Image (cartoon, rainbow over all chains, first blue to last red; front, side, top):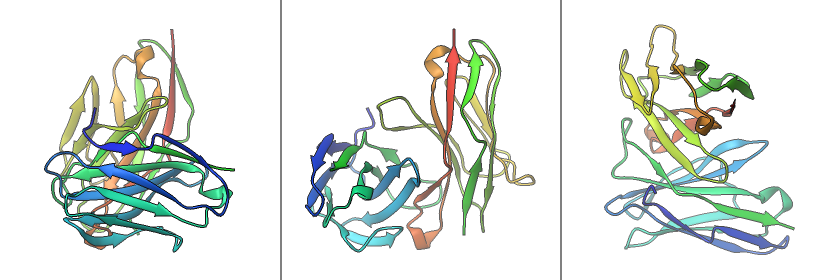
Length: 114
Length: 114
């Protein structure tokens, strides 16, 4: 158990809908990262928050957004869903941010768009 | 940009065989290097890491040495077990522009047979 908690574990929704994925980082971790894992794209970095502020964006679509709240939990919002958004979405956290920092991953949220 | 290249899988070995999974990287600066493992149906777990050249990371019988001259971080284990069957990901930390998010290779699937 990494200490990173993600909910829901599984989600099935229809095209065009909107979903919210939730992440609670490890106790004391200030950094939260979101990743998307799909068979064709592999593990793609989406976005990074540090202590409530957005720090970096990766390959995140404009239909997707995220935020980190004062209690440090984070939410990833996915809207106007398409079939191709079906994937495993990981949240990860670390104490700080930096080159040698160890990043711990949650078990992921499986999203299926039908 | 920074990237990681892993050997293509799947790799199939008999129990107690020697394992090598090749990983090479391209990066500006001096990234930290990681191996993560994903067991079936689970999230990503940190297996080992190295933060500077010539460092050796080790855990659970797995080892990898940070080789700056060959830009490599190959994963090795002397005697694999059936329980080592999983997907292995090599990764490096990005730079400050990405919030030091991890860049992953495509993963190498390992199947160990009795």
